[in-house]
Every structure is written in structure tokens, then in C-alpha cells.
Length: 588
Image (tube, rainbow, N blue to C red; front, top):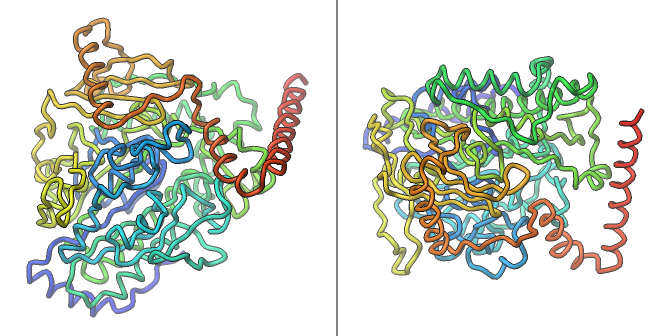
């Protein structure tokens, strides 16, 4: 995976200097990581080697109080449109949406025609626009990248897939993995490594149009570190033994580094999640297996960073680097699911042998205990409304960014990115209108002032910012956060925290602040009604809902009643056998 020479670099550099002299607007590179926790990035306190991303971060502004949705497609809808996810049509991940919600416009699972993407606005105003990697905001013809403002595209329409074999599903949601190139079914290589492939294709698009005087937008949607967690062997080897002290020690070490970097308050406290096991109580084989999982996870992140380095090197070689603005973010917090329900199917598809983890044909996850460390020092992880699920690493750097105040601590949100990029490109769209038709207005604020060194709060102290996903809900108002999480990380009851002084959500304030507690519940209900938020059924469980939707939307229509029933019974039998075998072993 050595760096290769860039074709036409000298010619590209000469053209770039000429364009810069003409006052070219900034190029835009958006780098979206998948399922990275708050402190996975080195510049946010992590021990994983991410030198290329760290170098970019140190040239810009890190946003230490930046929020997304707690799962992929709602976040991506807001990133692309600047519109809150329910209003954009993606109030939940399609796979976990309750059946009763499917008729609602807020939960259709793909972008509504009432939103316009930032790529469309940039393209209309003279930008070249490219996307490679994960799409996941709708695979209907009207929602594929060419109809959403992208000139060139190679994308995966699903939530994820294998990183070595592009045809291998990570769960049996559909009959296959759906890839699209420029809006048509794509012919994929038999083997690849996803992070490398996505960067290769992006560099190819840039090279093909290097003679153009137009600025570009390049969006790379990485699969790292979505399950299955996989990485090249040379990266895995670098982390051997690194995580032998366990997740509790790692969580504390990351908390200390985040404090030292000035990203969180010095006195930040942390909770221990109910899903985090006692490391010292695990036997040696379990500790070795779990440590290996985290070694692979770290390697996958570093391998992605290496590919980012290749893209940066290409931009430098072609003279584009100095007038390019970079945006990096994770789509949500670390993945804390244990994938127990998927085990019967995974047994027929993948190896989970410790010696194969990370390689082709092997399936690894991070799991809830390591996810807690990745999210350190925050509370929770992916799918939940705790800060660990929705507060993620984000930075903006490069052209037009003043790094004299490198950390911005004010409340910011993924809907802020689209208006920021448009302002940097000198584009002022008409609010609520696009080509003479009404559309949803962008909900976010431009971050331009923060990028120029202004540390003032972006939002007024009385301004509310609401959130909901799968029944896990939150409302921000000033420094306060009202939050409700369902099991296993919560009990369905509202809590109140000051997340400026207590981002670990350790000190409940509803008793001390009853007036604010009641008022913010009312604020949340007003927000929810205005955004089409629906309550989840009383017996709702997102993991079980994924299985239900999988059977009803794919297995039953594809295989019929009897074959589906037989398949479900077969897998249930395997699961029961595995459980009983595990119980027998535990008694020995």
C-alpha cells in the first residue's frame, strides 16, 4: 500500500497556481468516518496513530461540542442538506424503523424531494462534485448521487458491507450489496480494501478533470470503522499487546489526554455503563480475544488515516492543497452492539477465529465495552442519545480557516456544516426555495465566525436544539441537556444535565432545577410535534425490530412463508445450541 506517483502532478500544479491567482473559491473535501467514538482520533485524545488527520486538525479548528444523530443515515441526511433528519425524511435508520412509522413522511428512510443537497447548490454555482463510498440516504433513482448534485459517483447504497469483498453482506438485510456508479448498477472488483478503493476512485475523478478551472467538492464516505471491523495485516501487527490492560484503563487514559488537550473540562467525571464488563473478571483467553478485537479496530482506523494521507499527498502534488478546505467528522459514536442475534447467520458466512480477525472472510466487532472506551469520556455509544452516541470528533481546516483559536467549545451540530460550506463558497441560497419550488429551509448555523477565531456561542441561550432516534431523545438549551434513553443504557425517564461543565452526564439536575426541567420537557414536545416525531411502541426494541423488518421486507417476499419459517427455525436452533453449550461450559 505504498504511495504512488501522481499522474500529471506538474501540469496540475501549474494550473492550480493560475486558478488561485484568479481568486478561485476554495475546494471542499469532506471526510466521513463511520462509527468513530469521540476520542478515537489522536487529535481528540486517542492513542491510535492518525497522523494525517491530526495534521489537518492542527491546521484548523476542532469542535469539541459537536453533535450528530446516533446512527448513519439520519446524520448523512443532515450533513448533505442542513435540514433536521425527520424533516429530511430519515428520522430513523430504515432497518430499525417500527412498522407503524413507515407511513409517516418523517420516517420514509430516504431523502424527501422537499430537501436540496449542498452538492446540488455547489454544482449549480460552478463546482465540480464527486462522491465515493457510503451513501445510505436512499437508493431510489430520484435519490442516487446524480440526482442529488454529484457529477461523478461510486457509492454503496446500504448501511455497510464487507471491507475486503464488495459483494459480501454484513447482515442479510437484502439479497445483495447494492453499489452504484453514476446512478447505475456498478461493476465492482472481486476483491478490494474499502478505504483504499474509495480514495483511489476519488483521486481518479480529480485526475480526469484536472484541467478544469472549476473548484471541486469531494466527499469520501469511508466504511471504517463499521462492522465487520477489518484491516490489513501490517496495520494490525503494529497494535499487538497495545490493549492488554483492558477497556477501563483505556477509557481513563483517553479521558486524561482529552483533558490535557483542552477538549473537555479538567474535572470531568465519567459513568461506568451497565454494558461494560469488569476486565479483571475475564479469564485470560477472553482478555486476549477482546484485546485482539481492539487491535483490529485501531488498525482499521489507522489504515483509513493512511488513505487520507494519500489523498492529501495528491492534493499537494497537484497544487490544490493550499486552497482546499477540509471537513472531518464521524457519522455517530462508537458501535456498542454485541451482534448476538446475528450469530447464527454469521456462523454460516464468516470466521470469528482470533487468528483470522481483521482479515478476509473474518468478522470482528468492537463490542459495548470497547465502545465505551472509544467514546471516552462521554456517556453511551451509537444508537443512544447520551453524549457518547451523538458527540463526535469534528474539525474544519485549510483555506479560509484561522487556527489561532484551535478549539471551539460552543454547541454545534451536523446541520451547521452545509450552511458553513455554502458561505465559504460565496453562495447564498434563497431560504425555503429552490428553482422556484418550496423546500425545507436549512436548520443549521454557519460556523464561519468560529473558523475566524470567534469563541462566542453560536446559538442563543434560549434557542432549542431537539433530537430523536428510536425513542432515545434529547433537547439542548444553552448549557443544559434534557435526555431520555431506553434500555439497556437508560430507563425511559428524562434526565437533566449541564453538558458544558459535565459532558460525562454524571450529575443529574432535575431536583435542583425543577422549573427548567419541566420547561424543557414542554420545549421538547413542541419540537417533536413540529418535526413529525412519533413515539415508539411500548414493546419496541431496535435490535428485535431489525430482525422483524429483515423477515418482512426481504426474507418473506423473497423466499415465501414456509422457507422463511424453516430458515428462522434453523437459525433459532443454532442459537439455542450455542447458548446451551455456553451454559454447560460455564458450569465446568
